[in-house]
Length: 100
Image 1 (cartoon, helix red, strand yellow):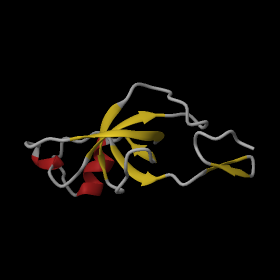
Image 2: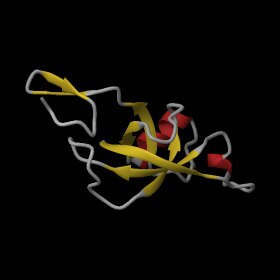
Image 3: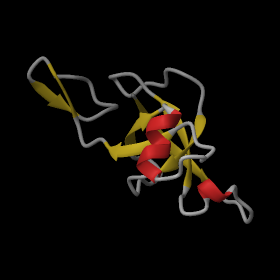
Image 4: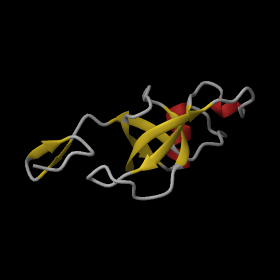
């Protein structure tokens, strides 16, 4: 799993059957400081995330197909949780803020 920030969503009038029930998000993977760490990619939304939210991304097709109950689904990434804060070294901080 990895952390990412939601930067947008995809609007599509025609979708693969395995995507029809889900919003498709554009996400930018980030490090513990909230800084971009990899190129952006797409994922389905399983946690009702919005633009600007930090999310936990699962990138394992079999697990996602199990979560969505679609054994033949064409999905390889899903946002599975909205991140409220990160705790490191006993201190809590929001992504994008300096750990203090």
